Length: 113
Length: 111
Picture 1 (cartoon, each protein chain N blue to C red):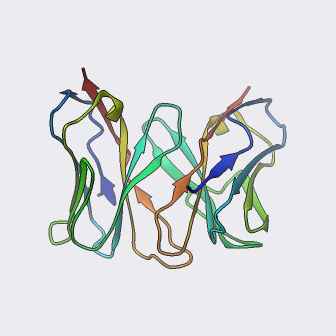
Picture 2 (cartoon, rainbow over the protein chains, first blue to last red):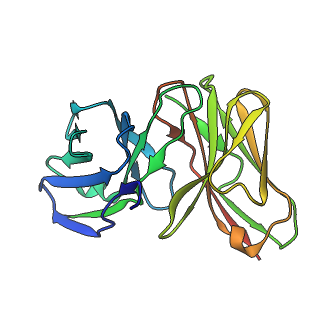
């Protein structure tokens, strides 16, 4: 079983739709959870950063962590064509000085005008 | 805003050449990382550094080395480039306990 599983898509939605992106993981020691957005031929951009379980909201984006189910989600409300990108989940055991991230392989999202 | 810059966006080298990829961050971050990203394989960690002159191997260090002489600068070295090192190389940096911030990437082609 891979440590982090993420459906690669592709996912295609109409403009204005609510988008749900998900990752599951197997390592119960993961404590820090992140979502990145990566446009084609660019570096990943940190979107959301959460510690432990719960929800975090930032504008049209909401991140949810359910540690009991080992499941994290990113919701995008009122999706825009500019949201078209690959979304990567990432997580780590430690937030300490030498922590490493484990990434999902990314979900390709297209928002159609 | 955090800024991570990489020395080149696109690079073409020949097999056997020594290749230097440089990364600079301007936010006094302790940790710096080098990844490569390939279709279907995702992001894979090559090396990371949590302090000046300190380095640790990641998941795929073979064929690579790194140097961190100053806190803001982290270099990736391909000692003798091979065609299977053709990839997108990404540098990242972070404070303790924070998310990683990535540079724009260097797309390296080895002929």
